[in-house]
Image (tube, rainbow, N blue to C red; front, side, top):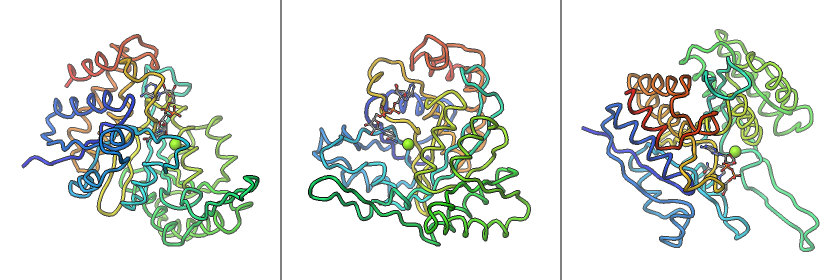
Amino acid sequence: MSRTITVIPGDGIGPDIVESATAILDKAGCDFEYEYVDAGLTALEKTGELLPQNTLDAIERNGVTLKGPLTTPVGEGFTSINVSLRKHFSLYANVRPVLSFTGTQARYENIDIITIRENTEGMYSGLGQKVSEDGNEAEAVSKITREGAERIVRFAYETARREGRKKVTAVHKANILKSTSGLFLKVAREIAEEYPDIESTEMIVDAACMRLVMNPEEFDVIVTTNLFGDILSDLCAGLVGGLGMAPGANIGKDCAIFEAVHGSAPDIAGKNLANPTSVILASIQMLEYLGMQEQAEKITKALEDVISSGDRTTRDLGGSHGTTDFTQAVIERL
Ligand code: NAI
Ligand code: MG
C-alpha cells in the first residue's frame, strides 16, 4: 500500500522547488500519495487563516510532511507559522545537515556537519514578551528545562551512533547565560557520560563561530539550544554553498516535517531561478526517516552527479539554468 505524505507547497519559490522534489521522488519509485494542503500567505489569501485546521489535521493524520517555505506577514501581529507548527506538534529536534558537494561555489570541500538544534525552548519559546508603554523597554523570557535539554542531547548522541559519527560538540554560552545555558551544559555533560563510544566536546558559541569558519572539518555533530542552532546552521549552510544546499527536519515523537532551511525568497519567486537542492535533500532526509534507504541513496547519487558535472545547474551553483532544467537533469539520471 502506498504511503500518504502531507505536502505544503508554501509561498514564493516554495511551489516550484516542492514540485521538483515530488517529481524526483516519483521517478525514484517511491510510490507516495500526496495530500496537498496550504499554510502561510497562500492559506491566508484562500481561507483567511495562516494555519487552517485542515492543514493541522493532515499533518497529524499522515505523520510525515514535506513543506515549502512559508511567508509570515511582518508587522501585523502574526506569529511565525514555523514556530507555531514546531510548538503545536512538539517537534523538538531540528536536524540540519550540511554536506560538501563537488562542483559548487563553496569555500570548503570536506564538510559533513549535522547541527541538532533544540526547537521548542530557549529564546524562541515566546514566553514573557513585553514592551513598555512608552516603547523604550522590551523583555522576553528564555526558558530551558532539564527534560527539553535531555531529550535533544540524547537525540544528538543517538543520531551520532546510528550514523557512525565520531564526535558530538555541545555549543553553549554558560559563562554568561549562567542559568539557562548553564543548565543545558550541565545536562549535556551528564548525557555525554552515557555515550563513552562517542567523543564529547563543548564549545562556547562565539568561539564555535570562529572555528567553524577557520577549521570546519573538525566538526561532526553539533548540539545546541534554539537561537544558537538557528544561527549556526545558516553559518554551516554558508560553508557548503549557501541556503539552497541546506535541508532541515523537524522531528517530534509522533510526527515530522521536512523542509528547506531557507525562506520563500521573494526576490527570485516566480522566475524559475531557485535551486531546489534544499528541498530535494529534505526529501532524502524524509526517506531516511521512513527507512527507505535505497531510494534515498539513488536520489543522492543523481543529485551529486548533476552538481559535480555542472549539468544544467542553477545560478547560485555557478550555472545558468533554472529550477525545471535542474530537476530534469536529476530525473534523467534516475
Ligand atoms: P530567504 O531565505 O527567503 O532568502 C535569502 C536569500 O537567499 C535571498 O537572496 C534568496 O534569493 C536566496 N535563496 C533562498 N533560497 C534559495 C534557493 N533555493 N535558491 C537560490 N537562492 C535562494 O530569506 P528572507 O528573504 O529573509 O525571507 C523571506 C521570507 O521567508 C520571509 O517572509 C520569512 O519569514 C520567510 N522564511 C520562512 C522560512 C521557512 O518557512 N522555513 C525560513 C526563513 C524565512
Ligand atoms: Mg533560520
